[in-house]
Picture 1 (cartoon, rainbow, N blue to C red):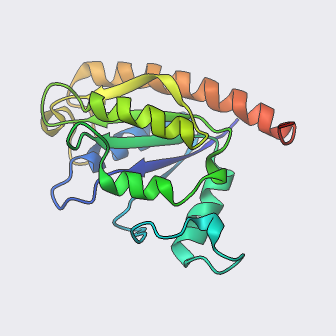
Picture 2: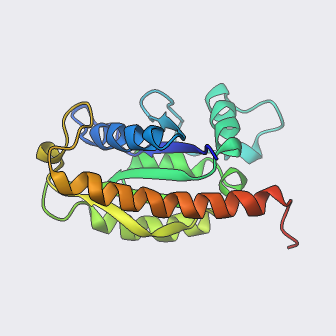
Picture 3: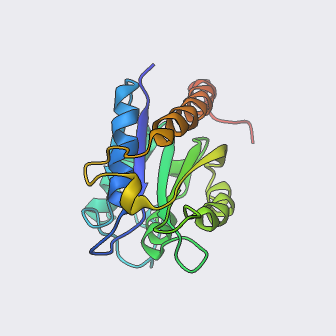
Length: 193
């Protein structure tokens, strides 16, 4: 069963490294027969949060919100690509997430964090878990943390370190399982509560 996985990139910095991680995971998702869709806040700029998508009258939300809402409604799960900013999530990612709510419900999320140093952005991943659960897309138990991203991945998103492909394969297998399980339950109709 082919699944749709938006990849929510968290950085808008001019020298950002996360784009390499997004390209890496998108390539692996596509190789598994699924549809990765990169959501880059540089290409899909949202204003600082004033009103959520659901707070606009039907058909009156900005075009970029309508486009993302349509994508999110057909999504089977979300991959979050996050650097660690001051022991938390990048502001561009938080802003991107906060514009939506019901569009995330009953879809799993998978956290891919990274850093220039040794810790791979794991504190951003810890902070994201609470946020994602509140949004209705709880994260899978595993995370994929990429340390020293400047060396670990090429500009095109190719792994320069052998462990990375193996770790990513396990990570995506777990994510697929959760996405397939929740897709089957969503197909049965709305929840009773």
